[in-house]
Length: 180
Image (cartoon, rainbow, N blue to C red):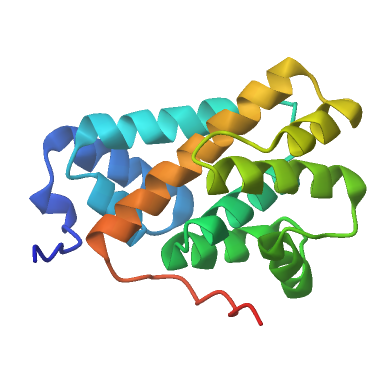
């Protein structure tokens, strides 16, 4: 079996080095997952641009986007993204108990619950969300634009989940609590 290693900055091409240096300035470190995606500068740039574009939208709040990241990463059993997004969710104001509830697909906030249940359904069913979850999303007042954006957010997280699943690189964030 191929063993993947996290490349050092000088082991990736110049375009990835430039991008990863920017990541390091912004985050204070280069996460192992980003460094690994940096084996391909186009993939790294595309992922970061896609996430930045979706993050600039006002259809979902930063907290809602983090909740989507958590529930999708739970569906895909991505220990790396669960660790990273649990830390980010706490920075956005979620408690550990709330991050666990989100990962289980059941949080008290009705708007957030509608979002995460649909995201969970779409991720579990390989893109085909359960009709009842889709209907509940629109009944809650969400638009077609929000629906498409939700799929985009799921897609972005699925990409990083799959990179981790296929490479098994070391997690460099504190582990997310196990679900009971």
